[in-house]
Every structure is written in C-alpha cells, then in structure tokens.
Amino acid sequence: MKRKKCVLYLRVSTEEQTKGYSLNGQERIDRDFAASLGYEVVNVFREEGISAKDLNRPQLQAMMNWVREHASEVDAIIFWKWERISRGTEYDYAVLGRFFDECKVSPLSVTECNEDTPEGELLRWITKGTALYERRKISQRTSMGMEQKAREGIRPCKAPIGYLNYTLPDERKIIVIDEATAPFIRRAFELYATGNYSLKRLGDTLYYDGFRHPKTGKKYPPRKFEWMLKNSFYIGTVVYKGNYYEGKHEPLISKELFYQVQSMFGHKKPKTHNIYFPYTNMIKCECCGKHNLSAEMKRGAHNSGEYIYYRCSCGCKAIKQEELEKVFIDMLNDIYIPPAEIELMKNEARELLQAIKDYENSLESPVEMQNKIETIKSRIQKSYSDKLDGNLPYGMTEKDWNDMMSNWASELNKLEIKLTERMEKSKILYNRLSLIMSFCNQLPELFRLALPEVKREIIQTCIRTLSYNGETLKIELFPIFYKLKYWKNVKNGAGNGSISEPHSNIFSIMEDEECQILYHKIEKLIAA
Image 1 (tube, rainbow, N blue to C red):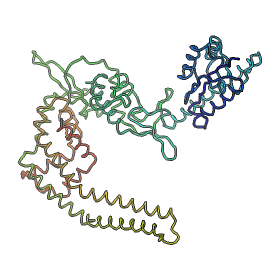
Image 2: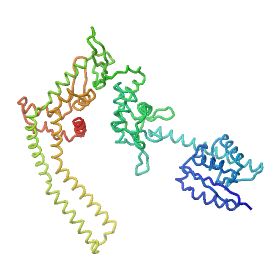
Image 3: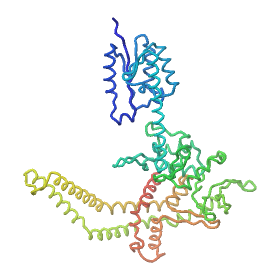
Image 4: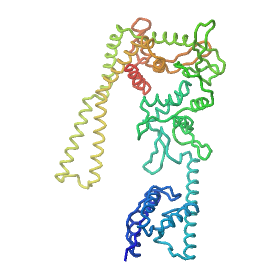
C-alpha cells in the first residue's frame, strides 16, 4: 500500500521565542503525530519570529507555492495548532480553504479536532474565532502599552537616525544620541535652513561628507531627508497617534532651528541659480531678537549689475554683502600674525609651557608617579608569588584576593594614563597653538581666494556670534583668537603686560572643549 505524504509547517513569534517555545519542539511533536497516522514527511517549512496576523509570511507563502507544484504528491499539511497557520480575519481563512480544496490536501492540527463532520467543523470555527480574538486583544494591549510609553516621554519604537536604542544594566530601555550620525542630522537642518539647498542637493552634500546608509553605503533619497527634517523627535518631542508628548531623550537641535526649517517647506521655492549666499542665517537680528538675516539678490539701477544684501523679515535695515566682507576682512587682518612674529610668539609659548610644566611637576612629578607605578607592580608580582606558594594572609578568600588585584590593576592603569598625559600634554598644546598661529598667518589671503562655501566656514571658525542692529555689525570672536590678538599687540608694543599673566593664559583656553573642536575645524580648512 502506498504511504501517505505530508509537509510540516512550524511557526513561533518573537514573543513566544522569549518564553521558551521552539521550532524544534514543534517539529518533534508534529513528526510523532504524522507517524501515528502513517504519514511520511516530505518537506518542512520553518517560520521564526513572525506573527500570524496575516498570510504574508515568507515560509507560509513558500509552503503554499511548493504544495501547489507538488499537489499530486502531498496528502496533508500538519501543524501544531490552527493559530500556527493564521490568527487573521475570515478572509484569510477563506483563502486557506480555497488553497486546501484546490490542492486536495487535508489540514491537520496536532492538538485540535480534525474530524470531517459538522461538529468538527464547528469546533474548528470556534478555534479560529478564539485565535482571532486573542490576536486582537494582544494588539489592543500592545497599543495601550505603546501609548503609555509615549505619555512617559519614551518613543515606543526604533529610534530615528541620529539616535540609538540602548538597554541599561537594570533592563530599562532608553534612547541616546548616536555620536556617529547626529552631526549629520544637525548639519542637515543647518544647511536646509539657509534656503540654498534643495532636498536633493542636501543629500548630495552630506553623502560626500560621509553620511550614507549603514547597510548599503548608498545615498539617502530626498524623501528620507524630508522625513528627517519634519520629524519633531529631534527637538525632544514624542508623537504617537497624533498626540505630542515631552520626550525624555536629549534634543539634537533647537526648536528655533526646527521651526525655521518647517517654514522653508511652506515657502515658494526660489528661482534656480548658481549663486551661493555664504552668510545666510549666520547673523542674529538685534532689532527683533527672533530671526536671522537671510540673503536676497537685486539688480541695481541703470544696469549697474546685481548685488546681494542681507536683511531680516522684521524690516530692519539691510546690509550689503560687500559691506559684510569688508568688516570680515578688517577682522581677519586684525588677528593676522606676520611670519616674523610667529617664531617670537612660539619661543615665548615654549617658555610659558615649561613654566606650567615645572609647576605641575612640583605638585606630583613624573618621577613620583613612576615610583608609584613600580611600587604597585612589585605588590602585584609579590601577591602572585605568595598565592602560588600558599602564603596568602590568614582568612583571605579567593574573592578577596581577586578584588585586591583588581583594585591594584585599576590604580596602576590610572597612573600610567596620567603619566602618559603629563608627558604628552605640553607637546600636544604646543602643536595646537602652532597650527592655530599658522592659520592666523594665512587668514586674509585664505579668505580672499576662498569659494563662498569656504568663506562661510572660515567666518564660523573664527567668530562665535554675529549680530546686527540695523547700523552696526557686532562680532564676538572665539577666546583663542582674542588671546592671540592680545599677544600680538603686546609683542608690537600696542598693549601692556605679558601673555604669561594669569588673565591671559592661552593654554587653559586651549584645553576647553570648544577650542578642541575649533582645532579640528582648522585642520580641515587648512587641508582643504
């Protein structure tokens, strides 16, 4: 007698996996059931981590296609429960019913009624209805849980680009800033706010800066940038089902910048041109205190040509770009350091660094730190020897010994790092100062020859804030440039005092995080 043949369909959801359910366990039970009915298993389809809310599952579809192709060779499909096949709607069960009829295969549940009687059919419909009810209750509970998370300020799904989902040691889940991609998100908002970038150009610019899809390495499409630029999550807001909640995560950008970008989407796109406005949205308007100056281009009288000016939407008096650049050139000339003066300033910097180094060494010299390091190493070596010889102090357990060794190793590591930093610190600070001096030496010529995009970078590297009151452009330099300007004036006899005076300690400024960021920007500018 020819033996009947069957296929097995196995499925577990992600939630079930966490509760210990397994596909292997299902397969063992299904195979035993098939053997008890005299069926030979000819194929197995395994669906892992997928819900049964609909029929759009890779392995279920693969099974249905395979059975259609081998309908003459298959007599039954065996599964653990009907809910393994579907927890969907009546429509899904109708689709499955047609599939079973067309292929002339019998659906057999290991744990439920398979009788081909009215009573058996009733029980199956009750089972299917119960599975559908359970799915809807799970969906309802999930939705309620997600809404509660949103109310508590937690995004109830995957963090957007610029953030990472993170699990704390106590299993609490939080969202933290992704330092690798967050700078690109900030730059996207800043560039788009200028009004000089379309979504496509924004994507091209950031792609060449290194912002790419983590899996494919390809450029993000314009629609992705539009989604990012309209996402209020970046200002600390969680949105769920149309409701807005104050998020617990750290905002990436200011609300002012976000709403400035939103206003760009509502504006009519400017006429296409090849002119780049370098100072758009760099200058704060003091007249209204709310907006930044944006660029406009007009044609002068009697065909005198086009000119660019910057103005605020509040109606404050405009300022021409040529006037701005004159102020900037005067400012750059003011902090320009002639080549002959650089070596003099470097020599004084060396003397000052040595004085600082001598003072720090008097507090705890490298020799003293090296002696401490050697002492700890001797302790560690002796303790290892004592342990091997069985000479540990009475009552000391293995855990006590391990804890002691761990503490010594930690102290040793900290001392070695501190010693390395002490030995390298002066060298690093001097190199940074030399680079910044070289930058100041090139500034006027660099600015004069630079493209508009680079001019903007130069100004943003030197100036912390810019504001305009309708008459005067106010400039606040970064402290390092104020100190170099002061130092230069002292060398030229234009001021009194010395760079080594406490109020003008240039090296303490250079250790600030702000100055370290400027140092990297200067490196990039000089390299370009």
